[in-house]
Image (cartoon, rainbow, N blue to C red):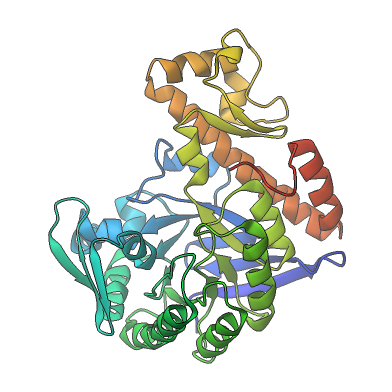
Length: 378
Protein backbone atom coordinates (compact mmCIF):
# COMPACT_ATOMS: atom_id res chain seq x y z
CA UNK A 1 0.00 0.00 0.00
CA UNK A 2 1.53 3.31 -1.09
CA UNK A 3 2.07 6.04 1.49
CA UNK A 4 0.71 8.56 -1.04
CA UNK A 5 -2.65 8.36 -2.77
CA UNK A 6 -4.17 10.79 -5.27
CA UNK A 7 -7.92 11.35 -5.41
CA UNK A 8 -9.37 13.08 -8.47
CA UNK A 9 -12.48 15.04 -7.56
CA UNK A 10 -13.28 16.95 -10.73
CA UNK A 11 -11.84 17.97 -14.08
CA UNK A 12 -12.56 21.51 -15.26
CA UNK A 13 -14.72 21.34 -18.40
CA UNK A 14 -13.26 24.62 -19.63
CA UNK A 15 -9.55 23.77 -19.32
CA UNK A 16 -8.98 20.17 -18.24
CA UNK A 17 -7.40 21.31 -14.95
CA UNK A 18 -7.71 18.88 -12.03
CA UNK A 19 -9.32 19.38 -8.64
CA UNK A 20 -8.08 16.71 -6.27
CA UNK A 21 -6.64 15.60 -2.99
CA UNK A 22 -3.30 14.04 -2.12
CA UNK A 23 -3.56 11.73 0.88
CA UNK A 24 -0.38 11.54 2.98
CA UNK A 25 0.57 10.07 6.38
CA UNK A 26 0.29 13.59 7.85
CA UNK A 27 -2.95 14.78 6.34
CA UNK A 28 -4.79 15.56 3.13
CA UNK A 29 -3.61 18.19 0.64
CA UNK A 30 -6.20 19.97 -1.51
CA UNK A 31 -4.87 20.42 -5.03
CA UNK A 32 -3.80 22.38 -7.01
CA UNK A 33 -1.69 23.71 -4.16
CA UNK A 34 1.31 25.92 -3.47
CA UNK A 35 3.90 24.62 -0.99
CA UNK A 36 5.85 27.18 1.06
CA UNK A 37 9.58 26.43 1.14
CA UNK A 38 11.31 25.87 4.48
CA UNK A 39 14.83 25.21 3.22
CA UNK A 40 16.49 24.59 6.59
CA UNK A 41 13.41 23.12 8.30
CA UNK A 42 11.97 26.61 8.71
CA UNK A 43 10.00 28.88 6.39
CA UNK A 44 12.02 32.06 6.78
CA UNK A 45 10.40 34.41 9.28
CA UNK A 46 7.12 32.46 9.57
CA UNK A 47 6.22 30.08 12.40
CA UNK A 48 4.43 26.75 11.97
CA UNK A 49 1.42 28.24 13.76
CA UNK A 50 1.31 31.14 11.30
CA UNK A 51 1.59 28.71 8.38
CA UNK A 52 -1.43 26.85 9.69
CA UNK A 53 -3.35 30.13 9.93
CA UNK A 54 -2.51 30.62 6.23
CA UNK A 55 -3.94 27.11 5.62
CA UNK A 56 -0.65 25.70 4.34
CA UNK A 57 -1.22 21.94 4.19
CA UNK A 58 2.29 20.96 3.13
CA UNK A 59 5.71 22.61 3.23
CA UNK A 60 9.00 21.77 1.57
CA UNK A 61 12.48 21.34 3.06
CA UNK A 62 15.84 20.86 1.38
CA UNK A 63 17.87 17.68 1.53
CA UNK A 64 21.18 19.26 0.50
CA UNK A 65 21.06 21.95 3.19
CA UNK A 66 19.87 19.60 5.95
CA UNK A 67 22.52 17.07 4.91
CA UNK A 68 25.14 19.76 5.59
CA UNK A 69 23.56 21.05 8.80
CA UNK A 70 22.38 19.90 11.25
CA UNK A 71 22.83 16.49 9.58
CA UNK A 72 20.21 13.86 8.84
CA UNK A 73 21.26 11.61 11.72
CA UNK A 74 20.52 14.35 14.23
CA UNK A 75 17.09 14.88 12.63
CA UNK A 76 16.47 11.13 12.82
CA UNK A 77 17.46 11.20 16.50
CA UNK A 78 14.98 14.02 17.07
CA UNK A 79 12.19 11.83 15.69
CA UNK A 80 12.23 13.10 12.09
CA UNK A 81 11.53 16.48 10.54
CA UNK A 82 7.95 16.68 11.79
CA UNK A 83 8.98 16.53 15.44
CA UNK A 84 12.22 18.44 14.93
CA UNK A 85 10.41 21.49 13.50
CA UNK A 86 7.07 21.03 15.30
CA UNK A 87 5.03 20.62 12.11
CA UNK A 88 2.33 17.95 12.14
CA UNK A 89 1.15 18.39 8.56
CA UNK A 90 2.73 17.02 5.38
CA UNK A 91 6.35 17.68 4.40
CA UNK A 92 8.11 17.22 1.06
CA UNK A 93 11.89 17.12 0.71
CA UNK A 94 13.68 17.67 -2.57
CA UNK A 95 16.62 15.44 -3.42
CA UNK A 96 19.44 17.96 -3.46
CA UNK A 97 19.85 17.61 -7.21
CA UNK A 98 18.94 21.23 -7.95
CA UNK A 99 21.37 22.55 -5.33
CA UNK A 100 24.14 20.42 -6.79
CA UNK A 101 23.17 21.84 -10.21
CA UNK A 102 23.53 25.37 -8.82
CA UNK A 103 27.06 24.56 -7.60
CA UNK A 104 28.30 24.14 -11.17
CA UNK A 105 31.73 25.54 -10.34
CA UNK A 106 32.14 23.27 -7.31
CA UNK A 107 30.97 19.83 -8.46
CA UNK A 108 31.84 16.85 -10.65
CA UNK A 109 29.14 14.53 -11.99
CA UNK A 110 29.82 10.88 -12.71
CA UNK A 111 27.65 7.77 -12.94
CA UNK A 112 28.16 6.87 -9.26
CA UNK A 113 26.96 10.27 -8.06
CA UNK A 114 28.17 13.82 -7.60
CA UNK A 115 31.29 15.09 -5.89
CA UNK A 116 30.91 18.66 -4.68
CA UNK A 117 32.28 21.12 -2.19
CA UNK A 118 30.19 22.50 0.63
CA UNK A 119 29.19 26.11 0.09
CA UNK A 120 29.66 26.55 3.85
CA UNK A 121 33.29 25.55 4.36
CA UNK A 122 34.58 24.02 1.14
CA UNK A 123 34.62 20.43 2.45
CA UNK A 124 34.58 17.78 -0.28
CA UNK A 125 31.31 15.79 -0.15
CA UNK A 126 29.57 13.11 -2.20
CA UNK A 127 25.89 12.50 -2.98
CA UNK A 128 24.60 9.46 -4.85
CA UNK A 129 21.07 8.18 -5.46
CA UNK A 130 21.55 5.78 -2.54
CA UNK A 131 22.88 8.44 -0.14
CA UNK A 132 20.19 10.97 -1.10
CA UNK A 133 17.54 8.30 -0.48
CA UNK A 134 19.04 7.27 2.86
CA UNK A 135 19.23 10.90 3.97
CA UNK A 136 15.59 11.49 3.07
CA UNK A 137 14.52 8.26 4.77
CA UNK A 138 16.19 9.63 7.90
CA UNK A 139 14.50 13.03 7.54
CA UNK A 140 11.13 11.27 7.35
CA UNK A 141 9.21 13.53 4.96
CA UNK A 142 5.87 12.27 3.65
CA UNK A 143 7.03 12.83 0.06
CA UNK A 144 10.62 12.85 -1.12
CA UNK A 145 12.31 13.13 -4.47
CA UNK A 146 14.55 10.86 -6.49
CA UNK A 147 18.09 12.16 -6.95
CA UNK A 148 18.39 13.72 -10.39
CA UNK A 149 20.54 15.98 -12.51
CA UNK A 150 18.98 19.28 -13.53
CA UNK A 151 20.53 20.41 -16.85
CA UNK A 152 21.04 24.15 -17.27
CA UNK A 153 19.37 26.42 -19.81
CA UNK A 154 20.52 26.68 -22.48
CA UNK A 155 22.26 23.34 -22.99
CA UNK A 156 23.31 21.28 -25.99
CA UNK A 157 21.09 18.37 -27.03
CA UNK A 158 23.75 15.68 -26.52
CA UNK A 159 24.50 16.86 -23.00
CA UNK A 160 20.81 16.94 -22.04
CA UNK A 161 20.27 13.47 -23.54
CA UNK A 162 23.10 11.98 -21.47
CA UNK A 163 21.88 13.80 -18.37
CA UNK A 164 18.28 12.69 -18.85
CA UNK A 165 19.26 9.05 -19.33
CA UNK A 166 21.44 9.22 -16.21
CA UNK A 167 18.53 10.65 -14.23
CA UNK A 168 16.43 7.62 -15.23
CA UNK A 169 19.14 5.23 -14.09
CA UNK A 170 19.51 7.14 -10.84
CA UNK A 171 15.74 7.00 -10.30
CA UNK A 172 15.82 3.20 -10.47
CA UNK A 173 18.64 3.14 -7.92
CA UNK A 174 16.64 5.41 -5.59
CA UNK A 175 13.70 3.01 -5.71
CA UNK A 176 15.95 0.08 -4.80
CA UNK A 177 17.45 2.03 -1.88
CA UNK A 178 14.09 3.22 -0.49
CA UNK A 179 13.60 1.69 2.97
CA UNK A 180 10.25 3.19 4.03
CA UNK A 181 7.68 2.84 1.20
CA UNK A 182 4.95 2.20 3.78
CA UNK A 183 5.13 5.75 5.21
CA UNK A 184 7.13 7.77 2.66
CA UNK A 185 6.28 8.30 -0.99
CA UNK A 186 9.20 8.56 -3.42
CA UNK A 187 8.46 10.69 -6.52
CA UNK A 188 10.35 10.40 -9.81
CA UNK A 189 11.49 13.55 -11.63
CA UNK A 190 10.97 13.95 -15.37
CA UNK A 191 13.81 15.85 -17.04
CA UNK A 192 14.71 16.47 -20.68
CA UNK A 193 15.53 20.15 -20.84
CA UNK A 194 13.75 22.07 -23.60
CA UNK A 195 13.70 19.14 -26.02
CA UNK A 196 10.30 17.54 -26.62
CA UNK A 197 11.63 14.12 -27.57
CA UNK A 198 13.79 13.96 -24.44
CA UNK A 199 10.83 15.00 -22.27
CA UNK A 200 8.85 12.18 -23.87
CA UNK A 201 11.67 9.71 -23.34
CA UNK A 202 12.11 10.71 -19.71
CA UNK A 203 8.36 10.45 -19.02
CA UNK A 204 8.22 6.97 -20.55
CA UNK A 205 11.20 5.73 -18.57
CA UNK A 206 10.06 7.22 -15.26
CA UNK A 207 6.43 6.10 -15.52
CA UNK A 208 7.59 2.55 -16.27
CA UNK A 209 9.10 2.52 -12.75
CA UNK A 210 5.65 3.12 -11.20
CA UNK A 211 6.41 5.86 -8.68
CA UNK A 212 3.48 7.02 -6.49
CA UNK A 213 3.86 10.52 -7.96
CA UNK A 214 5.82 12.47 -10.54
CA UNK A 215 7.60 15.80 -10.62
CA UNK A 216 8.57 17.83 -13.64
CA UNK A 217 12.04 19.26 -13.11
CA UNK A 218 14.45 21.37 -15.12
CA UNK A 219 11.96 24.19 -15.75
CA UNK A 220 12.03 27.72 -14.35
CA UNK A 221 15.83 27.66 -14.80
CA UNK A 222 16.04 30.78 -16.94
CA UNK A 223 13.96 29.83 -19.99
CA UNK A 224 11.12 32.11 -21.18
CA UNK A 225 7.76 31.17 -19.75
CA UNK A 226 6.20 30.32 -23.09
CA UNK A 227 8.84 27.62 -23.47
CA UNK A 228 8.13 26.29 -19.99
CA UNK A 229 4.44 26.03 -20.90
CA UNK A 230 5.30 24.22 -24.13
CA UNK A 231 7.30 21.65 -22.17
CA UNK A 232 4.41 21.20 -19.72
CA UNK A 233 1.97 20.64 -22.57
CA UNK A 234 4.32 18.03 -23.98
CA UNK A 235 4.99 16.27 -20.66
CA UNK A 236 1.87 16.34 -18.48
CA UNK A 237 -0.33 14.18 -20.78
CA UNK A 238 2.31 11.42 -20.53
CA UNK A 239 2.02 11.20 -16.73
CA UNK A 240 -0.45 8.84 -15.01
CA UNK A 241 -3.84 10.44 -14.39
CA UNK A 242 -4.19 8.67 -11.06
CA UNK A 243 -1.04 10.13 -9.46
CA UNK A 244 -0.03 13.63 -8.35
CA UNK A 245 1.96 15.90 -10.65
CA UNK A 246 4.43 18.36 -9.17
CA UNK A 247 6.07 21.28 -11.03
CA UNK A 248 9.30 22.03 -9.19
CA UNK A 249 10.53 25.53 -8.36
CA UNK A 250 7.64 27.53 -9.81
CA UNK A 251 5.79 30.14 -7.77
CA UNK A 252 4.93 33.31 -9.68
CA UNK A 253 1.17 33.96 -9.66
CA UNK A 254 0.81 33.71 -13.44
CA UNK A 255 2.74 30.42 -13.60
CA UNK A 256 0.61 28.90 -10.83
CA UNK A 257 -2.56 29.62 -12.78
CA UNK A 258 -1.11 28.56 -16.14
CA UNK A 259 0.43 25.43 -14.61
CA UNK A 260 -2.90 24.46 -13.05
CA UNK A 261 -4.60 24.87 -16.43
CA UNK A 262 -2.06 22.42 -17.84
CA UNK A 263 -2.82 19.77 -15.22
CA UNK A 264 -0.26 20.43 -12.46
CA UNK A 265 -1.30 19.61 -8.88
CA UNK A 266 1.61 20.85 -6.74
CA UNK A 267 3.99 23.82 -6.92
CA UNK A 268 6.79 25.21 -4.74
CA UNK A 269 9.14 28.18 -4.83
CA UNK A 270 11.20 30.43 -2.55
CA UNK A 271 9.92 33.45 -4.54
CA UNK A 272 7.23 34.77 -2.13
CA UNK A 273 9.51 34.91 0.92
CA UNK A 274 12.62 35.95 -1.02
CA UNK A 275 11.00 39.02 -2.59
CA UNK A 276 9.26 39.75 0.73
CA UNK A 277 12.69 40.20 2.32
CA UNK A 278 13.41 42.80 -0.38
CA UNK A 279 10.25 44.71 0.48
CA UNK A 280 8.13 43.46 -2.44
CA UNK A 281 4.52 42.34 -1.95
CA UNK A 282 2.24 40.37 -4.25
CA UNK A 283 -1.16 42.08 -4.38
CA UNK A 284 -4.40 41.75 -6.31
CA UNK A 285 -3.27 44.77 -8.36
CA UNK A 286 0.20 43.41 -9.12
CA UNK A 287 3.59 43.75 -7.45
CA UNK A 288 4.03 46.46 -4.85
CA UNK A 289 7.49 47.54 -3.65
CA UNK A 290 6.46 48.82 -0.25
CA UNK A 291 9.89 50.22 0.63
CA UNK A 292 9.51 52.84 -2.12
CA UNK A 293 9.21 56.46 -0.98
CA UNK A 294 5.68 56.93 -2.32
CA UNK A 295 4.35 54.70 0.49
CA UNK A 296 5.88 56.83 3.27
CA UNK A 297 2.48 58.25 4.28
CA UNK A 298 0.23 55.53 2.86
CA UNK A 299 -1.83 54.21 5.76
CA UNK A 300 -3.75 51.64 3.78
CA UNK A 301 -3.01 47.88 3.87
CA UNK A 302 -0.61 46.18 1.48
CA UNK A 303 -3.65 44.91 -0.42
CA UNK A 304 -7.19 46.21 0.27
CA UNK A 305 -8.60 42.86 -0.91
CA UNK A 306 -6.42 40.78 1.43
CA UNK A 307 -7.49 39.38 4.81
CA UNK A 308 -4.06 38.23 6.04
CA UNK A 309 -2.66 39.15 9.46
CA UNK A 310 -0.45 41.88 7.98
CA UNK A 311 -3.24 43.54 5.99
CA UNK A 312 -5.73 43.34 8.86
CA UNK A 313 -3.43 45.08 11.29
CA UNK A 314 -0.69 47.16 9.66
CA UNK A 315 -0.30 49.87 7.04
CA UNK A 316 2.04 50.25 4.11
CA UNK A 317 3.62 53.22 5.88
CA UNK A 318 4.37 51.17 9.00
CA UNK A 319 5.73 48.19 7.07
CA UNK A 320 7.88 50.51 4.95
CA UNK A 321 9.25 52.09 8.10
CA UNK A 322 10.13 48.69 9.56
CA UNK A 323 11.89 47.53 6.40
CA UNK A 324 13.81 50.79 5.99
CA UNK A 325 14.88 50.52 9.63
CA UNK A 326 16.00 46.88 9.20
CA UNK A 327 13.42 45.70 11.70
CA UNK A 328 12.78 41.96 11.30
CA UNK A 329 9.06 42.36 11.96
CA UNK A 330 8.62 44.18 8.64
CA UNK A 331 10.11 41.25 6.71
CA UNK A 332 7.90 38.85 8.65
CA UNK A 333 4.81 40.83 7.71
CA UNK A 334 5.61 40.91 3.99
CA UNK A 335 6.47 37.19 4.10
CA UNK A 336 3.18 36.31 5.80
CA UNK A 337 1.32 38.44 3.27
CA UNK A 338 2.95 36.91 0.19
CA UNK A 339 2.41 33.36 1.40
CA UNK A 340 -1.21 34.18 2.18
CA UNK A 341 -1.59 35.70 -1.28
CA UNK A 342 -0.44 32.51 -3.02
CA UNK A 343 -2.33 30.06 -0.80
CA UNK A 344 -5.48 32.17 -1.25
CA UNK A 345 -4.85 32.34 -5.02
CA UNK A 346 -4.79 28.54 -5.13
CA UNK A 347 -8.07 28.42 -3.19
CA UNK A 348 -9.56 30.61 -5.94
CA UNK A 349 -8.07 28.34 -8.61
CA UNK A 350 -9.66 25.29 -6.95
CA UNK A 351 -13.01 27.08 -6.75
CA UNK A 352 -12.80 28.03 -10.43
CA UNK A 353 -12.06 24.39 -11.39
CA UNK A 354 -15.03 23.25 -9.32
CA UNK A 355 -17.24 25.73 -11.21
CA UNK A 356 -15.77 24.96 -14.68
CA UNK A 357 -14.51 28.51 -15.21
CA UNK A 358 -10.73 28.44 -14.75
CA UNK A 359 -9.98 30.06 -18.12
CA UNK A 360 -12.37 32.91 -17.29
CA UNK A 361 -10.74 33.24 -13.89
CA UNK A 362 -7.29 33.40 -15.49
CA UNK A 363 -8.33 36.18 -17.86
CA UNK A 364 -9.96 38.20 -15.08
CA UNK A 365 -7.03 37.69 -12.73
CA UNK A 366 -4.42 38.65 -15.31
CA UNK A 367 -6.35 41.79 -16.24
CA UNK A 368 -6.68 42.86 -12.60
CA UNK A 369 -3.06 41.94 -11.88
CA UNK A 370 -1.95 44.29 -14.65
CA UNK A 371 0.00 41.65 -16.54
CA UNK A 372 1.28 42.25 -20.05
CA UNK A 373 1.79 39.20 -22.25
CA UNK A 374 1.20 36.87 -19.28
CA UNK A 375 4.40 38.07 -17.59
CA UNK A 376 4.04 38.76 -13.87
CA UNK A 377 7.22 40.76 -13.43
CA UNK A 378 8.62 38.22 -10.95
